[in-house]
Length: 304
Image (cartoon, rainbow, N blue to C red; front, side, top):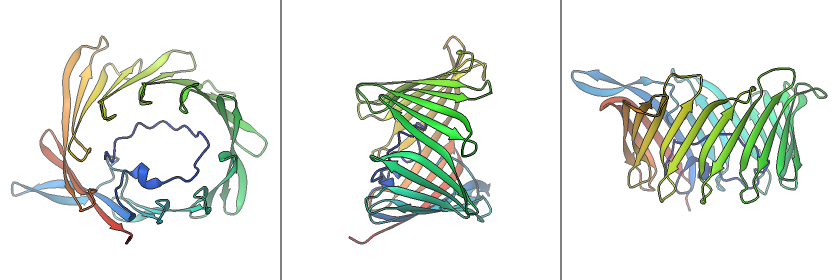
């Protein structure tokens, strides 16, 4: 499965009931832990070899993640490019698999539920706690409120859902007292795949229009971003997959403001090694045929 391409837009629709994190990580088998570390590729005597640690987003940060036997993520440790631990998180669940708390050192997030939906998020730092978010459900809309203090609301997000899908068709962010409000509209195809995101600024002008295309297997095969003010040109990416459903090629290209093709910016390819479960354990990343990075993963499994 694809392990690193995600269309990320946070809809906190409220329910994290019986969540299986192995599904999100696209891992096969009863995984116990996974270690992911990324390295540069350096050229020595005409041969490319593994260099030092790097901090890149291609496959997530350098980290070790542990899971329980139900597939819930229970611990995650992050490292910088010197191999030093930078953050540790612990995740606590109830007997039904509902996330109750996330603990990051002396900082903790607590979640309260009603009818399987989150209604309140409490943040605690050095044993001092306050309500950070509340969630209100009104018919086809979910309204998220953000609090500065216990009694003062800093802003809110409003999500509107369509009649035929459990996914939002719009998201509105309102900052009280500031002109930084924006809105996003979302569209989907008949298979519930996200096909477009249109972002508007506080003047209701389009800032960005992102379009997505899928193949018959619901795999993302092209993404095109159209900008209004941030870039003189638009850009797109075409994806190709191998027999494991992992992306092995990305063609990055540019368009002018009239959508005329300007040429390829670069081509990125991926070469994998897999374990007996079908999870990749090594990936060499090439840019324009030159090795740039090597990502190594060590995966352990629970015994059946």
